[in-house]
Every structure is written in structure tokens, then in C-alpha cells.
Length: 328
Image (tube, rainbow, N blue to C red; front, top):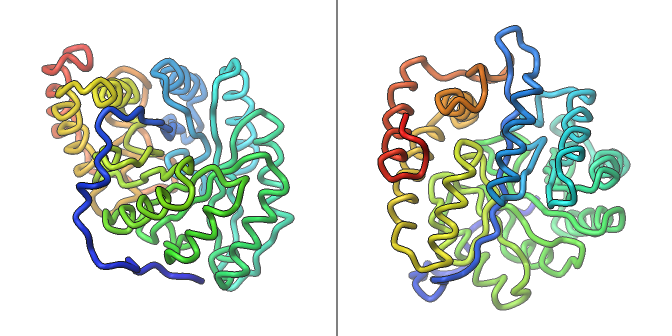
């Protein structure tokens, strides 16, 4: 497995600033649950529609959708519903292969995971697995090239181990190899480290400018100022506010900074350790907004303490004071 180091001397990122750039925002969609442990399908469809209506690209069956905890019928139910709602609009879905440490990379299982996403009209986001990240760099890139032979386009995914034990962050030479795979339209980067992402942006600009670097850094959502696009779990809490923030950046409107400040505070709170519990904060915030009925995480997922509600309510009030959401 190729493990990341920065690869270059730290450099101030000011040359990367891109004022007025149109941001391509992709937002994970929460899979909400009811107190009885069943999926709240009506709530999910509501969240899906709100994400589409905000102008963001919904990403389903991601970490925010409990990709590593749901079963195949649930995964299929998600795809069926998003395809029914999309009406020709772009959407994406995680292609997830569950395996164990030491397992070999299994291309056939990845092809099996890609097929229903492609059949429903979505763009696959290729999750890592123990088998995939256990390959040496040449084998890893060969695996991604093989995946690209089974779909027109896909998004790669670097996932830090603070999110999942099967994740890995690649070194820059390996990342350059991803840029050279035509079917790979971009890659989500979730190391939560700015320097590694800045390195990728410089490499992208030099090698393949149209390649999307999707920041997955929910603790540094201002990476969009430097040329990243985004594919975030945090935006599941407020796709409408993210869309307003993005429009302000494109227009040169200083409102970008006020909106980004509150969203960043929301990210710092929700994505504190243990990081996987952020999904419970997402559910609580969406319930406060009246977008879902229940603030329940997946039955097997970690939960946050009830007093998180007080902080989340305060942040919702701040967004209301900015006119970004109806005043609570």
C-alpha cells in the first residue's frame, strides 16, 4: 500500500486562491432511522429532494449513509429511490465492498457493486477496501484502471483511518497515477490535512486541470477557496446553506465568509472524536430543522450525548440570524 507523506516542502497556498470560481458541490445524504431501528424512507426522500433542489449533487450510500453498516436490500432501496427522484439530474453513489484485513483485492465484487449504480444512472464513488489498499502502487493503479473499464466515469476515494479501518491516503506518485486514468473524473480526499490536499491541487493543476479534487475535509471547508470542489458529510446538514455559500464565492460576495464561518463551526463540533458519531449530530440537526422526524443514528453506529442539541440549536440560530435559514 502507498502511504502518504506530503512529498514536497510546505508552501504557502496563496497562489492557489481562486476567487470567483464556480464550485462543484457534491453532498452526502444522510440515511435517517426511526426509533425502532428501521430506515425512515420518507425522511430520506425528503432529504434527497432538498439536496437536488439546492443544486448540489447528492451522493448516497456513502459514510453518511452508513455504507459499511447497511445490507444489500437497503443499498438497493436507496438506489431505486434516488433514480426515481433524479429526473435527469446528476447523482452519485458509493460502490462499497466489505472485506477483512488480509483479504485479496476482488475485482469481481467491485464490478458487482458498480453495476446497479451505473444501471440506475449514477456515478460510482469507489470506496477503498482492505484488499484494494493492500496492493502495491502498481497493482493499485491497475485495479483502478480495471474498474474504469466497467463504467464510463468514477470517482476515487482516499479515506483516512479515523473514518474507517479499511482506508488509506496515497502518496503523490500514486495520486499522479490516478490523474492519468481517463475514467477517473476526480477523487475525494479525506485525510483532514490541508497540506496533503494543497499538494494534490498543485499536482492536478500541472497534470490534468479538469480533474476534480473533492475535499472531504469537514474541518476545513474553506478548501474550496484554493480550487477544491467538495464531497462532504457536513453538507448533509445544510445543503441549502452550502449552495448559498458557494454562490456567494462565485459572485465575489463577502457573505461567503460569514456563512462559511458558521458552517465551519458546525463541522468542528460535529466531527470531533469519535469522528464516526458525526452522523448522529447530522440527524439531530436535521430534526431541529424539521427536515426529518427522528434524530436516530443507525442502531450499530456510535451516538452523541443528548446535550449536543444545545450547541446545535445555537448554531442553527446563528444561521437564522444571517438569513440563511428560517429563524428557529
